[in-house]
Image (cartoon, rainbow over all chains, first blue to last red; front, side, top):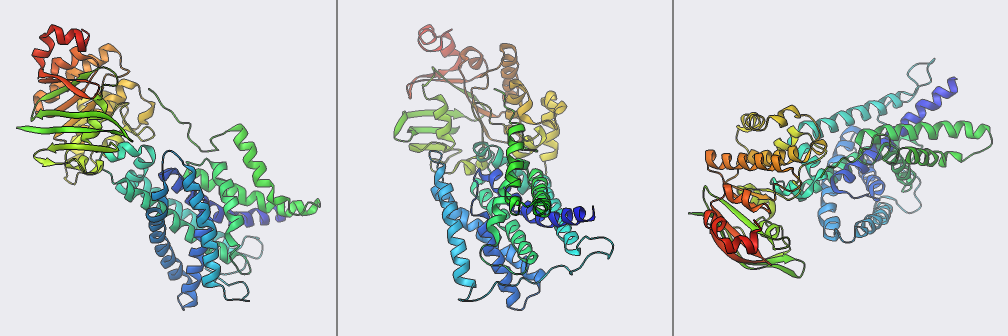
Length: 298
Length: 236
């Protein structure tokens, strides 16, 4: 039973990362209707920016905050310069192709800029002290820290979306772009804001992910992105709450199957589990656990 | 003085022209109604005013300045509120949020008072204040769309077929309310409508469109009284 709890909380740790990236995917999907396949690699690039700041002698906290800021500007610029020009009602696939291109481009750029030839994996300084919270309870201090960050992130995001004018505008553009223009909202600025917000969330998620292992390289976010997509599908692509819950579920499911799959001689089965979860949810509840049923009357 | 003036406006979607050198004028404080059959270009005319067409030739003047090439959001901020066909409510946002969005471009402090006024004018909206707009009936959504447009304190209100999909009784109430708003507040309106007799009742001027061209213009009374116009275009 102790093993179960250890693995459960271990899963929460990775779940926080999946949840954050899923949150970024959902933010962009809700505000712009685009599934950003480059979300993970954008976060990867941001992670290297965080690392670069620490390498310049900055503490990990200011490094992450600066990286979030740089990423938000970068995300907004990407929307304006690369996404919007190719957006068209007639062929929504154009944007998908561009985000796939960005996926490759950011990965290659990160390799080119930050990894010296022959270098080993980079080390991200830890934000939280190592060790368990007490000798009798097998919960790592860092897991508590990750969970706290996720809670703060969610509260801030909720306040922004529900309690501010910008949030209302963002939700309006997501709900009805044409009517948004008719009430005088500059929809272009809102699309950039959505992408900036998502890039900032991704920067945080990537930086946290990089601390969890023994070092990181350009493959850091690839598995994370797939699991984040799983989390978003599980929770419902239009629900920020769903993204968070979905991320935690996927993280815990992965962690438990790593442990118990090993016992029954099925190493590697953890890669399958999230997709079985998704399949079941989508069959039973096609909008995801928290997705809206679209209500429309004529 | 004319608040809105279209001079020789042509335009449409893609390469197809729907409007052909159209002239239209709306006087300050009056209701102008655009009548015509399906496909005559009534909706396109309103979209031309709001900068929502792929291309527009000619000139659109609002309050003396040209707005032909301005963006939709800038035109909205300049004081033109447009209630599009199908109402254009934010379906998954609450009634309250819809109304606040109507006033989103305002920076004065009167938004709260205007919210109260909206709920006074449309008590049904007050009852459903925190309900998702998309879950309300068609008539309630039409009220919401109009209330939202009024929240921007517009100088000109464009209404695209407000009666669409509404029961006759509700439509009559709606037009009475529009007539009252015009009479009490002097708000200028341009109304596109299929229901000619109801619309002419509250209008000062009428314009009849046929395949993108203005074929008859005149005072509302003269249009309603002219038998040949009624038979040929209005069907009542």
